[in-house]
Image 1 (cartoon, rainbow, N blue to C red):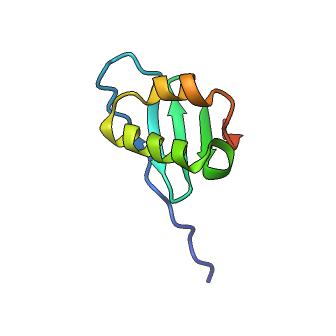
Image 2: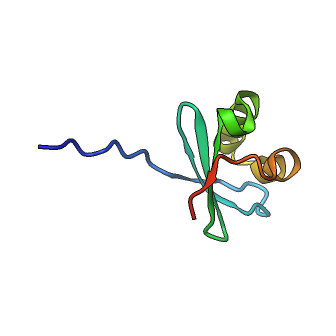
Length: 84
């Protein structure tokens, strides 16, 4: 019998400012998947965005503030791939 893939829960972004277009996030070891209010999802990996940026994204995602601005200011098109 085949094993079921490990499913990592997507967390709702706290959006403490009330102005963010980030809706959800999923933190993995080497990447962060960001879901936006437009329903688009992007994966930012250590390879595509740099490990320092991914680490910063993780901190901001958990804090619930500043992630949208950080992505718009520093990452723009540095995602590994668009999921949808």
